[in-house]
Image (cartoon, rainbow, N blue to C red):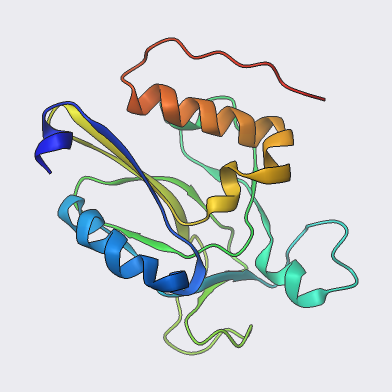
Length: 178
């Protein structure tokens, strides 16, 4: 709390279903800033990921999303690919940065079926907050900036934008490898 208010930047990365109880530890920090990592998994019945025809369940949990906020962190980004993300509850002064489309739902019982009481549509998975002189980013899916996703210019740009924003605008550069 004091670290952020005095100018520090933190990137908190969650995972679907509270993987390894990470939501417990992350929420001890996140809730200080009005955000909660939910113990669920974002599923989209209209997932548009190519190459998942052999595994229909993977297609459901790896949607391509294009709910992108107008914010420095999201500058130059058109769409993102999720891969087993949890949802976020963004309250207080937190700003949603990216969210799913209307066909997604937050699957709390992991049965790949939208049930009563589960949030449907426009599910937040990336948020940010400015607090005092510092900043925090909350990310519900580590895959956004890992492995093969970094070969996608949208994901590479997201990673750089996050570092730049958390570092208060210092110089950041990259070379896209393709």
